[in-house]
Amino acid sequence: MEFVKTTQQEQKALANVLKELFLLEGKAYSTKEVKEFIANETKSGRNFFLLKEGRDAVGCVNIHVDNGIADLKHFFVVKDNIDRGYGTKLLENVIDYCRKHNANRIFSVIPRMHELLFVQNGFSLDKNKVCVELINSMPEQQSNLQNQLKDISLVEEIGNRTAEKLRGLKTK
Image 1 (cartoon, rainbow, N blue to C red):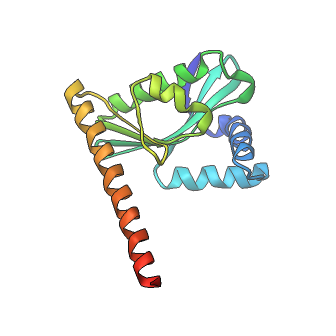
Image 2 (image 1 turned 90 degrees about the horizontal axis):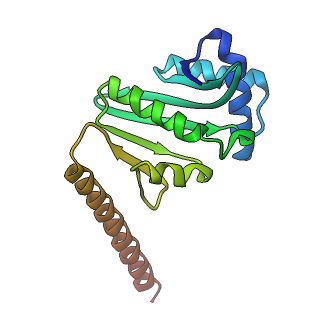
Image 3 (image 1 turned 180 degrees about the horizontal axis):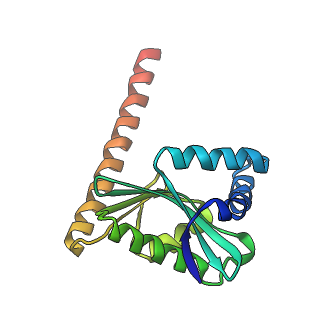
């Protein structure tokens, strides 16, 4: 199994994996549209990677690391390969890549089907389905970040309740 940065040779395989992901999200794109999307993402400094088993692409991810923060998009394992350990391998490779590129934190909005995988591998999941993991850090720093995420959620909840009360006062 190998984790490779996509090149022109792998672009068709990547496009096929992304088409499957986009279909699950309710978006139907042609191969040409997906290839244009890949080109635009790459031009903006993002890197696509494939997890390959032999010649087959079994998963992909889009990573951008900047100022110690890694942003993951399009983390996906092909449906036929779910529950075969590919998600774990893909995530392990992502974390290794981020460490090598000096990322201290990883953020990702992930498909529902991969939530458990991320949580089981030390990521926190907030109410907006954003996963956060601190890497190269002490456990107490991770705990502090989890507490900060809870505090942010609490502040948002209080703000929403206050807005509802104000709307109720305006209608009286």
